[in-house]
Image 1: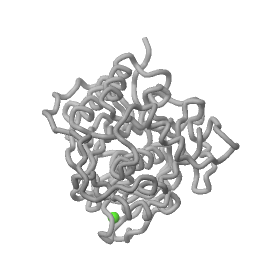
Image 2 (image 1 turned 45 degrees about the horizontal axis):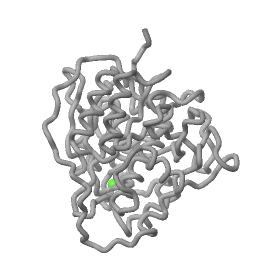
Image 3 (image 1 turned 90 degrees about the vertical axis):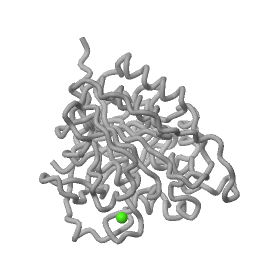
Image 4 (image 1 turned 180 degrees about the vertical axis):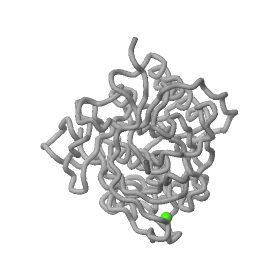
Amino acid sequence: MADFTWRLPEVTQHAAYTLQQAGERIPYALTKLNIPKVWETTQGLLPDGTPLLFGVIDSGVLFSHPDLQGRIKGSRSVIPGESGIDENGHGTHVIGTMVANEGNDIGIPGLAPLSQVLSIQALNALGQGTDEGMQEALKICVDEGCLVVNISAGMRGQASDGMRRQLEYAAKHQVPVIVAAGNDGGGVNAPANDPLAVAVSSVDRNGNPSHFTSRGEEIDIACYGEHIFSTSVDRRGQPIYVENSGTSMAAPHITAGCGLAICAGDLQPTDPERVKRYLRMNARDVHHPGRDPETGPGIFDPSQIGMNVKQPEGRTQPLFGGLFGELHSPARAGDFVSWGRGAA
Ligand SMILES: [Ca+2]
Protein backbone atom coordinates (compact mmCIF):
# COMPACT_ATOMS: atom_id res chain seq x y z
CA MET A 1 0.00 0.00 0.00
CA ALA A 2 1.45 3.32 -1.04
CA ASP A 3 1.96 5.98 1.58
CA PHE A 4 -0.11 8.99 0.57
CA THR A 5 1.02 11.26 3.37
CA TRP A 6 1.46 14.87 2.23
CA ARG A 7 4.21 17.11 3.49
CA LEU A 8 5.33 20.67 3.38
CA PRO A 9 8.74 20.75 1.74
CA GLU A 10 11.62 21.55 4.03
CA VAL A 11 11.69 25.29 3.68
CA THR A 12 14.67 27.15 5.05
CA GLN A 13 13.91 30.17 7.20
CA HIS A 14 16.71 32.72 7.11
CA ALA A 15 15.43 35.53 9.29
CA ALA A 16 12.40 36.80 11.19
CA TYR A 17 11.21 40.36 11.79
CA THR A 18 8.62 41.96 14.02
CA LEU A 19 5.96 44.20 12.51
CA GLN A 20 7.83 47.22 13.89
CA GLN A 21 10.95 46.21 11.98
CA ALA A 22 9.09 45.70 8.73
CA GLY A 23 8.48 48.97 6.94
CA GLU A 24 7.00 48.28 3.52
CA ARG A 25 9.46 47.36 0.80
CA ILE A 26 9.07 45.82 -2.62
CA PRO A 27 10.47 42.27 -2.50
CA TYR A 28 13.27 41.69 -5.01
CA ALA A 29 11.23 39.09 -6.85
CA LEU A 30 8.49 41.62 -7.61
CA THR A 31 11.09 44.05 -8.95
CA LYS A 32 12.72 41.36 -11.10
CA LEU A 33 9.28 40.31 -12.39
CA ASN A 34 8.40 43.93 -13.24
CA ILE A 35 5.26 43.64 -11.13
CA PRO A 36 5.02 47.41 -10.40
CA LYS A 37 4.75 47.87 -14.18
CA VAL A 38 2.01 45.23 -14.37
CA TRP A 39 0.14 47.15 -11.66
CA GLU A 40 -0.41 49.96 -14.17
CA THR A 41 -2.77 47.48 -15.85
CA THR A 42 -4.10 45.48 -12.91
CA GLN A 43 -3.56 44.80 -9.23
CA GLY A 44 -5.83 41.80 -9.16
CA LEU A 45 -9.38 42.96 -9.85
CA LEU A 46 -11.43 41.23 -12.52
CA PRO A 47 -12.84 43.40 -15.30
CA ASP A 48 -16.14 43.63 -13.43
CA GLY A 49 -14.31 45.22 -10.50
CA THR A 50 -14.51 42.29 -8.13
CA PRO A 51 -11.39 40.72 -6.59
CA LEU A 52 -10.11 37.61 -8.31
CA LEU A 53 -10.30 34.69 -5.88
CA PHE A 54 -7.32 32.40 -5.39
CA GLY A 55 -7.51 29.09 -3.59
CA VAL A 56 -4.63 28.26 -1.27
CA ILE A 57 -4.43 24.74 0.16
CA ASP A 58 -1.85 24.88 2.93
CA SER A 59 -1.43 25.17 6.70
CA GLY A 60 -4.15 27.82 6.99
CA VAL A 61 -3.75 31.56 7.40
CA LEU A 62 -3.32 34.08 10.19
CA PHE A 63 -6.15 36.20 8.88
CA SER A 64 -5.59 38.78 11.62
CA HIS A 65 -2.18 39.62 10.12
CA PRO A 66 -2.22 43.40 9.54
CA ASP A 67 -0.85 43.00 6.01
CA LEU A 68 -3.66 40.62 5.00
CA GLN A 69 -6.62 42.73 6.11
CA GLY A 70 -9.38 42.52 3.51
CA ARG A 71 -7.53 39.90 1.51
CA ILE A 72 -8.98 36.71 3.00
CA LYS A 73 -12.39 35.95 1.52
CA GLY A 74 -12.75 32.81 3.58
CA SER A 75 -10.78 30.47 5.79
CA ARG A 76 -11.75 26.86 6.42
CA SER A 77 -10.14 23.67 7.62
CA VAL A 78 -10.68 20.13 6.42
CA ILE A 79 -8.85 18.84 9.51
CA PRO A 80 -11.27 17.91 12.29
CA GLY A 81 -10.76 20.05 15.36
CA GLU A 82 -8.72 22.67 13.51
CA SER A 83 -9.91 26.22 12.93
CA GLY A 84 -8.11 27.13 9.74
CA ILE A 85 -5.80 29.48 11.65
CA ASP A 86 -2.18 28.98 10.64
CA GLU A 87 0.05 27.76 13.47
CA ASN A 88 2.90 26.83 11.15
CA GLY A 89 3.54 30.02 9.19
CA HIS A 90 3.85 28.35 5.79
CA GLY A 91 0.35 29.09 4.51
CA THR A 92 0.47 32.70 5.72
CA HIS A 93 3.79 33.14 3.91
CA VAL A 94 2.43 31.76 0.64
CA ILE A 95 -0.66 33.96 0.87
CA GLY A 96 1.34 37.11 1.66
CA THR A 97 3.41 36.62 -1.47
CA MET A 98 0.21 36.53 -3.47
CA VAL A 99 -2.03 39.22 -1.96
CA ALA A 100 -0.44 41.23 0.89
CA ASN A 101 -1.71 44.79 0.90
CA GLU A 102 0.20 47.39 -1.09
CA GLY A 103 0.78 50.94 0.08
CA ASN A 104 -0.11 50.36 3.73
CA ASP A 105 3.40 51.17 5.03
CA ILE A 106 3.99 47.73 6.45
CA GLY A 107 5.82 44.63 5.28
CA ILE A 108 5.35 43.86 1.64
CA PRO A 109 2.95 44.11 -1.23
CA GLY A 110 1.85 40.83 -2.76
CA LEU A 111 1.86 40.37 -6.54
CA ALA A 112 -1.91 40.80 -6.72
CA PRO A 113 -2.68 43.06 -3.76
CA LEU A 114 -6.34 43.63 -4.67
CA SER A 115 -7.17 39.96 -5.18
CA GLN A 116 -8.50 37.71 -2.43
CA VAL A 117 -7.79 34.24 -1.11
CA LEU A 118 -9.91 31.33 0.03
CA SER A 119 -7.62 29.58 2.50
CA ILE A 120 -8.24 25.88 3.03
CA GLN A 121 -6.22 24.37 5.84
CA ALA A 122 -5.35 20.79 4.92
CA LEU A 123 -1.98 20.64 6.65
CA ASN A 124 -1.50 20.89 10.39
CA ALA A 125 0.97 22.88 12.47
CA LEU A 126 3.61 20.27 11.71
CA GLY A 127 2.96 20.58 8.00
CA GLN A 128 1.29 17.20 7.64
CA GLY A 129 -2.01 16.22 6.09
CA THR A 130 -3.94 13.37 4.54
CA ASP A 131 -4.56 12.70 0.90
CA GLU A 132 -8.31 12.66 1.59
CA GLY A 133 -8.06 16.09 3.16
CA MET A 134 -6.12 17.47 0.21
CA GLN A 135 -8.69 16.06 -2.21
CA GLU A 136 -11.52 17.61 -0.26
CA ALA A 137 -9.69 20.95 -0.11
CA LEU A 138 -9.19 21.02 -3.87
CA LYS A 139 -12.84 20.22 -4.51
CA ILE A 140 -13.87 23.05 -2.18
CA CYS A 141 -11.64 25.52 -4.03
CA VAL A 142 -13.17 24.56 -7.38
CA ASP A 143 -16.75 24.57 -6.09
CA GLU A 144 -16.29 27.92 -4.36
CA GLY A 145 -15.21 29.65 -7.54
CA CYS A 146 -11.45 30.00 -7.10
CA LEU A 147 -9.91 30.80 -10.49
CA VAL A 148 -6.38 29.58 -9.68
CA VAL A 149 -5.31 27.22 -6.89
CA ASN A 150 -1.90 27.06 -5.18
CA ILE A 151 -0.59 23.88 -3.56
CA SER A 152 2.86 24.32 -2.04
CA ALA A 153 2.87 20.75 -0.77
CA GLY A 154 3.11 17.20 -1.99
CA MET A 155 4.59 13.78 -1.53
CA ARG A 156 6.94 11.30 -3.13
CA GLY A 157 5.74 9.00 -5.87
CA GLN A 158 2.61 9.59 -7.90
CA ALA A 159 -0.70 11.23 -7.11
CA SER A 160 -3.33 8.87 -5.74
CA ASP A 161 -6.29 7.90 -7.92
CA GLY A 162 -8.47 10.08 -5.73
CA MET A 163 -6.22 13.12 -6.09
CA ARG A 164 -6.02 12.53 -9.82
CA ARG A 165 -9.83 12.60 -9.99
CA GLN A 166 -9.81 15.96 -8.19
CA LEU A 167 -7.18 17.31 -10.60
CA GLU A 168 -9.43 16.18 -13.45
CA TYR A 169 -12.35 17.88 -11.73
CA ALA A 170 -10.36 21.13 -11.49
CA ALA A 171 -9.26 20.85 -15.14
CA LYS A 172 -12.84 20.22 -16.24
CA HIS A 173 -13.85 23.43 -14.46
CA GLN A 174 -10.89 25.27 -15.99
CA VAL A 175 -9.19 25.91 -12.68
CA PRO A 176 -5.40 25.66 -13.02
CA VAL A 177 -3.63 24.03 -10.07
CA ILE A 178 -0.15 25.40 -9.47
CA VAL A 179 2.05 23.03 -7.44
CA ALA A 180 5.53 23.38 -5.88
CA ALA A 181 7.91 20.80 -7.35
CA GLY A 182 9.52 19.84 -4.03
CA ASN A 183 12.73 20.66 -2.18
CA ASP A 184 14.66 17.41 -2.11
CA GLY A 185 16.77 18.10 -5.19
CA GLY A 186 15.57 14.86 -6.78
CA GLY A 187 12.68 14.06 -9.08
CA VAL A 188 9.55 16.18 -9.15
CA ASN A 189 7.18 15.25 -6.34
CA ALA A 190 3.49 14.41 -6.62
CA PRO A 191 1.15 15.90 -7.55
CA ALA A 192 3.42 18.45 -9.27
CA ASN A 193 4.57 15.62 -11.56
CA ASP A 194 1.02 14.95 -12.72
CA PRO A 195 0.27 16.22 -16.25
CA LEU A 196 -2.80 18.00 -14.89
CA ALA A 197 -0.74 20.10 -12.45
CA VAL A 198 1.53 23.04 -13.25
CA ALA A 199 4.92 22.21 -11.68
CA VAL A 200 7.05 25.09 -10.38
CA SER A 201 10.77 24.92 -9.64
CA SER A 202 12.89 27.48 -7.78
CA VAL A 203 15.72 29.76 -8.85
CA ASP A 204 17.83 32.21 -6.85
CA ARG A 205 17.75 35.95 -7.39
CA ASN A 206 20.30 35.62 -10.21
CA GLY A 207 18.21 33.06 -12.05
CA ASN A 208 20.35 30.06 -11.17
CA PRO A 209 18.52 26.88 -10.18
CA SER A 210 18.20 26.48 -6.41
CA HIS A 211 20.30 23.60 -5.15
CA PHE A 212 17.27 22.19 -3.36
CA THR A 213 14.78 22.39 -6.20
CA SER A 214 13.24 19.16 -7.41
CA ARG A 215 13.81 18.71 -11.12
CA GLY A 216 12.82 16.74 -14.18
CA GLU A 217 10.99 16.93 -17.47
CA GLU A 218 7.73 17.68 -15.62
CA ILE A 219 8.88 21.18 -14.61
CA ASP A 220 6.56 23.64 -16.37
CA ILE A 221 8.02 26.94 -15.20
CA ALA A 222 10.55 28.39 -12.73
CA CYS A 223 10.40 31.39 -10.44
CA TYR A 224 12.24 33.06 -7.59
CA GLY A 225 12.11 30.95 -4.45
CA GLU A 226 15.13 31.99 -2.38
CA HIS A 227 15.15 34.53 0.44
CA ILE A 228 11.50 35.41 -0.11
CA PHE A 229 10.26 37.92 2.47
CA SER A 230 6.59 37.56 3.43
CA THR A 231 3.99 37.42 6.17
CA SER A 232 4.16 34.71 8.80
CA VAL A 233 3.28 33.64 12.33
CA ASP A 234 5.52 33.26 15.36
CA ARG A 235 5.34 30.52 17.99
CA ARG A 236 2.86 32.50 20.03
CA GLY A 237 0.56 32.96 17.06
CA GLN A 238 1.56 36.58 16.56
CA PRO A 239 2.03 38.20 13.13
CA ILE A 240 5.61 38.54 11.95
CA TYR A 241 7.58 38.56 8.70
CA VAL A 242 10.13 35.95 7.72
CA GLU A 243 12.50 35.29 4.87
CA ASN A 244 12.13 31.74 3.51
CA SER A 245 13.56 29.63 0.70
CA GLY A 246 11.81 26.77 -1.08
CA THR A 247 9.76 25.83 -4.12
CA SER A 248 6.83 26.61 -1.80
CA MET A 249 7.88 30.23 -2.15
CA ALA A 250 8.30 30.05 -5.96
CA ALA A 251 4.86 28.58 -6.68
CA PRO A 252 2.74 31.47 -5.32
CA HIS A 253 4.54 33.87 -7.68
CA ILE A 254 3.25 31.76 -10.58
CA THR A 255 -0.23 31.43 -9.09
CA ALA A 256 -0.51 35.18 -8.56
CA GLY A 257 1.03 35.87 -11.97
CA CYS A 258 -1.61 33.71 -13.66
CA GLY A 259 -4.24 35.62 -11.68
CA LEU A 260 -2.91 38.97 -12.90
CA ALA A 261 -2.91 37.66 -16.47
CA ILE A 262 -6.56 36.62 -16.08
CA CYS A 263 -7.46 40.02 -14.65
CA ALA A 264 -5.76 41.72 -17.61
CA GLY A 265 -7.59 39.52 -20.10
CA ASP A 266 -4.36 37.96 -21.37
CA LEU A 267 -5.24 34.52 -20.01
CA GLN A 268 -8.72 33.07 -19.90
CA PRO A 269 -9.67 30.50 -17.30
CA THR A 270 -8.72 27.38 -19.20
CA ASP A 271 -7.33 23.87 -19.09
CA PRO A 272 -3.86 23.07 -17.71
CA GLU A 273 -2.28 22.58 -21.13
CA ARG A 274 -3.17 26.08 -22.24
CA VAL A 275 -1.94 27.56 -18.98
CA LYS A 276 1.34 25.72 -19.44
CA ARG A 277 1.57 27.03 -22.99
CA TYR A 278 0.91 30.57 -21.76
CA LEU A 279 3.66 30.25 -19.15
CA ARG A 280 6.04 28.75 -21.73
CA MET A 281 5.39 31.62 -24.12
CA ASN A 282 6.09 34.07 -21.31
CA ALA A 283 9.23 32.44 -19.96
CA ARG A 284 12.71 33.93 -19.93
CA ASP A 285 15.24 31.24 -20.75
CA VAL A 286 17.89 30.73 -18.05
CA HIS A 287 20.44 28.10 -17.04
CA HIS A 288 21.14 25.82 -20.02
CA PRO A 289 19.89 27.23 -23.36
CA GLY A 290 16.41 25.94 -24.10
CA ARG A 291 14.41 23.69 -21.83
CA ASP A 292 16.32 22.09 -18.98
CA PRO A 293 15.29 19.81 -16.12
CA GLU A 294 15.93 22.44 -13.42
CA THR A 295 14.04 25.41 -14.84
CA GLY A 296 11.87 23.97 -17.62
CA PRO A 297 11.38 26.72 -20.22
CA GLY A 298 12.75 29.36 -17.82
CA ILE A 299 11.57 32.01 -15.35
CA PHE A 300 8.05 33.33 -15.73
CA ASP A 301 8.15 36.81 -17.21
CA PRO A 302 4.87 38.62 -16.56
CA SER A 303 6.10 41.94 -17.93
CA GLN A 304 3.93 41.60 -21.03
CA ILE A 305 0.71 41.39 -19.03
CA GLY A 306 -1.62 44.03 -20.35
CA MET A 307 0.73 44.85 -23.23
CA ASN A 308 -0.53 42.35 -25.80
CA VAL A 309 -4.22 42.99 -25.82
CA LYS A 310 -5.52 46.44 -25.11
CA GLN A 311 -8.78 46.08 -23.24
CA PRO A 312 -11.18 48.96 -22.78
CA GLU A 313 -12.05 49.78 -19.22
CA GLY A 314 -15.38 48.61 -17.93
CA ARG A 315 -15.99 45.98 -20.59
CA THR A 316 -18.33 43.24 -19.66
CA GLN A 317 -16.73 39.99 -18.73
CA PRO A 318 -19.00 36.99 -19.04
CA LEU A 319 -16.50 34.31 -18.17
CA PHE A 320 -16.18 34.56 -14.44
CA GLY A 321 -19.09 32.85 -12.85
CA GLY A 322 -17.48 32.06 -9.53
CA LEU A 323 -20.62 31.66 -7.53
CA PHE A 324 -20.07 30.79 -3.92
CA GLY A 325 -21.94 27.65 -3.09
CA GLU A 326 -22.14 25.89 0.19
CA LEU A 327 -18.99 24.57 1.69
CA HIS A 328 -18.65 20.86 1.93
CA SER A 329 -18.42 19.13 5.23
CA PRO A 330 -14.90 18.56 6.50
CA ALA A 331 -13.00 15.51 5.44
CA ARG A 332 -11.70 12.90 7.79
CA ALA A 333 -8.44 13.42 9.60
CA GLY A 334 -5.27 12.25 8.02
CA ASP A 335 -1.62 12.61 7.59
CA PHE A 336 -1.00 15.19 4.91
CA VAL A 337 2.14 17.27 5.16
CA SER A 338 2.88 20.65 3.59
CA TRP A 339 6.05 21.78 1.77
CA GLY A 340 8.09 24.26 3.53
CA ARG A 341 8.44 25.27 7.06
CA GLY A 342 7.27 28.58 8.35
CA ALA A 343 8.11 30.19 11.65
CA ALA A 344 8.73 26.93 13.43
CA1 LIG B 1 2.12 45.72 2.75
